[in-house]
Amino acid sequence: MNGKRPLVLVVDDDEDFRAQMCAQLEAAGYDVTAAEGETAADALLAVTKPDLAVLDLMMERPDGGFALAYRLKKRYPDVPVIMVTGVTHETGLDFATATASDRAWIKADAMLVKPVRFEQLRRELERLLPQE
Amino acid sequence: MTTLRVLIIDDEQLMRTVVRRTLEKHAVSLPDIDGQCRFTVEEAESAEAGLALIDSDAPDIVLLDHQLPGMTGVELLGLLSQRQPAPEFLTVMMTAYATLENAVLATKRGAEDFLAKPFTPEELRAVVDKATRHLLMIRETRRLAQEKRQIRFQLLSVIVHELKAPLNAIQGYLYLMKDLPAEDDPTVHANAIDRCLVRIDGMRKLIMDLMDVTRLESGQKRRDLTALDLRDVAVAAVESVAPEAAGRRIVLNLAAPDPVPVTADRGEMEIVLNNLLTNAVKYNRDGGRVDISLRAIGARVVIEVADTGIGMTSEECGRLFEEFVRIKNDRTRNILGSGLGLSILRRLARLYGGDVTVASEPDVGTTFTVEFAAEPSAVIS
Image 1: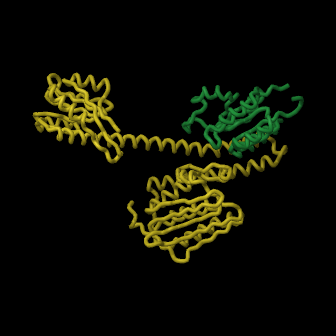
Image 2: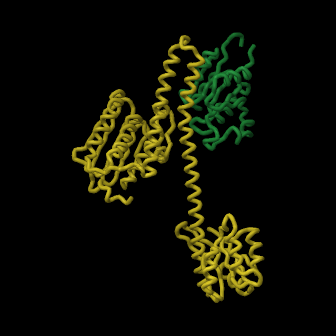
Image 3: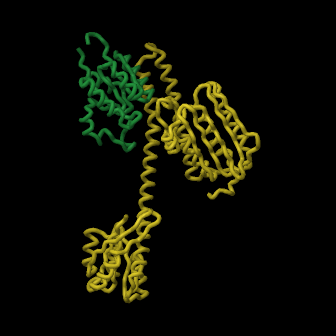
């Protein structure tokens, strides 16, 4: 990418999470584009190819993130996807373990559980976006 | 249609055949569940053979003879009554020697009913009908109790989730401020602080609403029923939302020409009107209006609050009063709420022998109508 800042797409319906991600990513040297839902994300993806996507699992639909990841991978198979979720055992919807086969199917390249420390995300970004 | 399995334990072949033929042709109608119950019959010629059948696949109803060649019927009952967990089938004792002593013993050991030999097919059917209804009632009760536990668990899960969301957001902002020096971009810090305060407010509102729910649920809140004019409560509620309405150029119009006397708890009436008015402002468009009308109609009170807001589809209206349901769409995304207000509103309306209804049209507005008894004497508590 010869000095160009990598572009990260952040999709989350929680405006606070979006604001935090954007601020942290920009400070860490990434370009950021954000969308608040599946529809907005699809519109963005139609015109832009990000270098990486950070998607929230639960949006308007409980599995909106999965569906979006599937469409994104179909359009851009080489774009890494990091799935973020606030869903853990207490909601009775334990995606992390219950859908290991789904994960293989959607090929999310990493799963992070909210609250996400930026250090965790940075590690995944560095692993998934090779520096040249 | 339900099918129950009946096990007859009797050493007389003829008796088993008669029972089988009678019950296999029989059907119990169950008006409550709008259905019918039919029977299949299995036979055992001794208590030992019956026990083996019970252990391999437990029946629903056991017709048990007392006088059997080996173990007696009452002895078999005694054996079964010691089992943990207790068997789920019902037992009807059949005996030609209906001594009081045996009857008492059998009842102690869990027999549901008695059938004195010889009996007519009608008597058999009557006893089986009664056992069937009782059995299905027990099962329904058990199912409801299970469902209630399930709902309670889900509710708790949602509360935990709703409390965690603002915590996550606040924690995220604190990390952000720790990681990014303020001097790099002061607006980031300023925004973080503002958002933390907003989320803390939301969390406090949720906790307050939860306390209202708990009080209503447990009935512990001391209710102070006094005679009041509902118009006074409405005026106070209008005043409390007026600053926010003015900020968004929303006109509040209270129409209550005549006194609306009620005997009610003032705090509860405040919750009702505050909930209605807060929603009408919160979900309104800038420059919109809210019309509040209060009327006494006979022994009933009708509160109507109409807004010119974002409105809802009929599907959204249907889910509206459930706990923690917040209608999520593009238009509500940035509106904060606990998801409890309307469920509290409905509980209160019902507490006063009434209910809440809603009529709405997307992009036109929503009208909530609360109607209840003016005097608590008219309420069955």
